[in-house]
Image 1 (cartoon, each protein chain N blue to C red):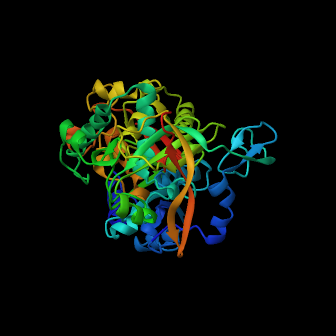
Image 2: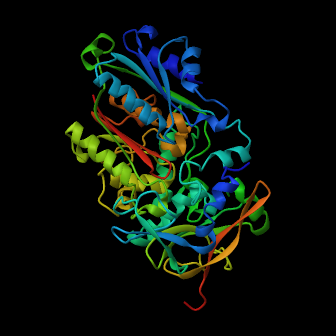
Image 3: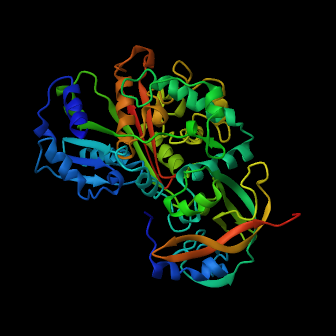
Length: 364
Length: 142
């Protein structure tokens, strides 16, 4: 899987690149279900034929490979490397169901939160219910996020679920953790993603349409949700986005599209607010008015999001970057999914219930 | 298969799980529960013990659907099916995550703002030791 993603990245370089030109790699993974895969990065790099290259595994829950990308970017900015690789991989479907339930949900507080009996849907469900309580948002808004992301995912050949769903179906689906149904949740996914980064002034050697990283923000927060003052926002994502915007020198309204971390539908609503696309408590209005659809004011998750494209935990951060880069280059594989004329794109990645977050902004 | 909290590690938290002993910050006086290395508000590491009343209100809640519980709670789900988990805002200030007990796991019967109090219940079993701790039950008639 990782080899396929790697080959696809190499082949995707408009000019040509010798893989040996890559100087160092950072690879995100939650270690595929505790499958005894310590020291994963050297194994993966060796399997793509680059044994000997420095390679480092990054584990930061669901934002692992967004952080891998950040470090690959920082290595170039520091002047140490000219070309780096950021990737991620997760294999979740060949684990027994029991093992998945054991393994997932340890990216928040274990001792006082999980071992009180909550799972991850439960944590986001409690955030959703509080959000609905404080801001008077209806459950329909959550279901509309699922419907939109399935609609986009249906047009993405790389998506796990390529079928549209109706609002009715999303609302009537079995409850996973009240008020969230199975359609409010991302699936269990196998996947890998690879990005190759290059020093800006050397990029013209490889492509005529370089996509530049113009902002990289990251932040952390209290791991346990009971230690956070406000459950209707992801404070780490807000900080990460603020920092990325500051570096990029752009405003939220200048962003043409965003891939955000919709592990649960409520997370996408909060992401609208944390990325500055909507005011606090106003995220629901954005989806209600269709502004985050392809063709809307700010298309979000044109690739289908975690909801429909899938959420292979360690690979998700870079897979969001892949989608944004493709969109900015005007190369979304199916034309109906292409956001026309997009020049600035944003990726928003959240680890666990918001313990870590990482936001990147890109410009064509 | 369960996430691992050793018996000594669990024993170290008996004061919290059975008796709700919290840490009051000597610098800013806010109450930290569960205990932390440094104060949530001001970062100080200087605390004194205080006992909480165990009374509070539901801040938010969820109902964990059948078959979805963390594996530690398989026994519980086999016995009760769905169960409710809430964040409780204690009257002294701190918030805790806990199961609701002695009530129906029905979203129409549980309300944000409802008054609850702590009781000791069986949480889960690990290494053949039953782990007890607090759950919260509604206080009848408010």
